[in-house]
Image (tube, rainbow, N blue to C red; front, side):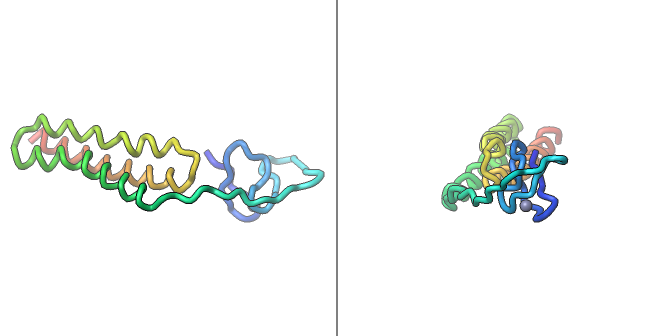
Length: 122
Ligand SMILES: [Zn+2]
């Protein structure tokens, strides 16, 4: 959950009472005596780490499907569930960038699982 600022549409953490970007109260009826506006510097996300996470997720969630399809051995299709480890870890991150990538990886894993089930049931 995030608190969207009515003034600037900035997505604040749900425990913020004031917008971190412009200082507008995020809770109705709250009138600040003085507002401190500061930019919280988020740590930069290492691109290589994100790319590696994508590779691991795609490999884990899709290899079961591919191996299952080639070998006709459906037991490999269940391997696909390991693909959820990385996105499940990332979506719990407080960092919005990591969270967003986690959700994309979750979607990739879902497709992998769906394909694996297709192999499993055919
Ligand atoms: Zn704002």
